[in-house]
Image (cartoon, rainbow, N blue to C red):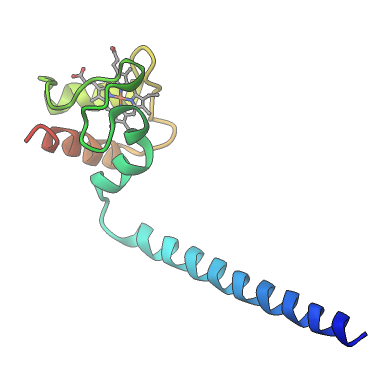
Length: 110
Ligand code: HEC
């Protein structure tokens, strides 16, 4: 019986710990959404899987941003409406976020 109580206590404390960290992370994500839009953060979350962290991964035929000659407007158009294997992001990102991440893809050229 003592063992069982000990186990319950252990389980409870693990549960308590994990729920606090969960609360902590929700909190930080709510506060981070209030921060100014970061193109690099959006890029890391959504774009690296095909374009790579430096923009030159070229996975699934993704454009190499080190070679891309597109203007900011053209990039915004591709990100908003998609092109071939690249899906449109207009449902997922608002115009300001699309612009921020488009700008970031231009910085990758350097
Ligand atoms: C599923 C893989 C995939 C993901 C994820 C992806 N892309 Fe692409 N992207 C592509 C492909 C493939 C192309 C080339 C399309 C073509 O050949 O017409 C492309 C092309 C582009 C272009 C056009 C560049 C040029 O010079 O033609 C831009 C800009 C771009 N992507 C930005 C982004 C951004 C920003 C994100 C994240 C929000 C993103 N992509 C996420 C696959 C992806």
